[in-house]
Length: 329
Image (tube, rainbow, N blue to C red; front, side, top):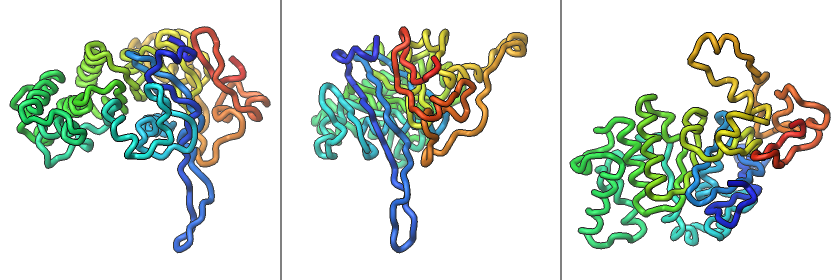
């Protein structure tokens, strides 16, 4: 699958921007700048594909996901979902489309209403969108979803606090699947779980993706999890995507200096290999998204940076199977 193959794409994001205004003053406020959380992001998701989005905390991964779902205001660019640009749609126009795109959140407890029983939580999307109007259809669908995510039927009458973290995340997944969405966005769905439970939830998502032919945008900072579940991977840095490549290509032949540094930071289980391998450490701190560097955003920390990097912003260009935003690749 390539970035140029847009005919079969379920989702195409073009030059997406999400800028949050910064104000000063108490009685009279004035805008003095903006936080460029997402600043010109472009990628496509083919039908049935799992696209992983990785990067450091604060790089704009979650904001990108929220923008795709129109849960934050979009400052610029296009979000083409099933052939329709939804970037400028208002809430009433978005309502019927929300059945086709759903989200699994990072916090498996905070995303569930503690006062609602699990069966009601899972069935709430059916009520909101007027699906399964008859009581028998509603109950049958809820039972089906509970079974689909590996929970027991009698759990429908319990409250979220009675479940473990992994079970709560299964509840969140069941709720997201209630309306048979075409696009499922998973925003770090296993980062709050124990390592042993992470594998179970990731394997469940992979099984559901295969069985239901879901298209998945999977956001995470754990590279091993992303490698296990993704078909292609995009690497973000300071509001921009710096590299997109098929999973094995990115891990075996990383091209962007930031991608190489991220992979070098992953420890190797063998202490002898770990002690002897060369590592490219990233120097300095992440610049402010309110005041990003000129040229390439990564240039103040990049070992390959030159005068061109400091003056001219690179764009994603094809290099074999990968697309990379770097002047020195």
